[in-house]
Image: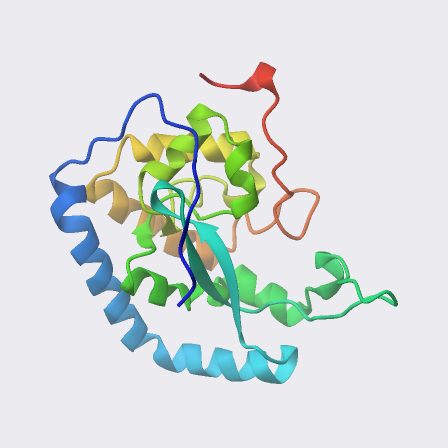
Length: 226
């Protein structure tokens, strides 16, 4: 498994208080859901892995460090969706040049995210929570945005069913923090069911100007929520 590191994130203004559901139900529920999904979807994952190996090469699994609960870094697992094509200087080509038609299909159907079931089983991800982003974004969050790390990140989340990659970073973070303040059983299951609908309709996969979400470069001070 990936080496865990502790990164210091901005101290939140309002510490998150866990209710009964979050303390006693959410984690066992996550484990059971991920275990059942892993068994049921194992044929799909096997076929996907074989196709990735044939069409995109090796390694089949893409690994990347992401910050989780309280900023603790863990290794996230996904099926790879890009080639390793490089220019004459040996530098990787831009994402849109390396993302193949097959890779776009994996992303649009969210099949690339199935290996994250292992992350749910080992406790680094929850089924529902703010999506884990890049480690380099940690020092860019303002105090409001940093609150997204008060809960375990998720396979899906409130922002993913309210715009996904079609909304701005600020809107996405606002929705993440809203979730942090409203974690509950019914809310989680509503997000799960809406996620299925969103995936089937392939909504909000890309931003308006990129095949992936644009890089987050921080929120201007004038737009900061304190």
